[in-house]
Amino acid sequence: MKRRLLFICTANQNRSPTAEALFARSQRYEARSAGVSPLATRPVTRDLIEWADLIFVMDERYDRHRTQLLERFPDVEGLAEKIIVLDIPDLYERDSPELIALLRRRLQPWVPDLDV
Image (cartoon, rainbow, N blue to C red; front, top):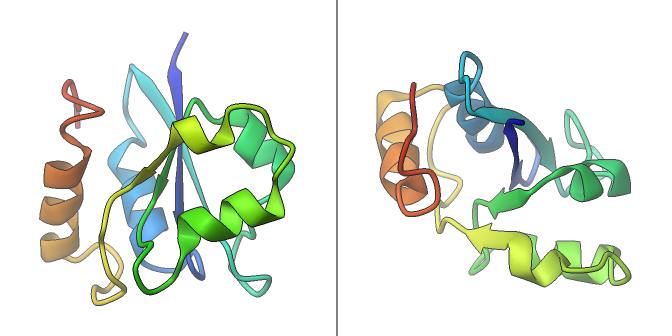
């Protein structure tokens, strides 16, 4: 069974779709992405939160992604334990080499067998 990874940013336009794309051909992981903004390309839903084994949020310091998820879905059991903050600010264009390299480095502790 593939491990299910959910990537969250603000608008689901640059950071989280880039992270999702890293796993498009993975044999070990299934990835999806969403945004915390109601105007996001794909807004985060309870179904996505419950689907995920791990949830990687891009930023907490400025965008409060982790806090927003915990406030929006307070009754999802075990949510706090499966959220990981990557500390990637909204400074990068979608699919930029810099963003891809940063994602690979930040994901390494949780996805050491990144096969992409």
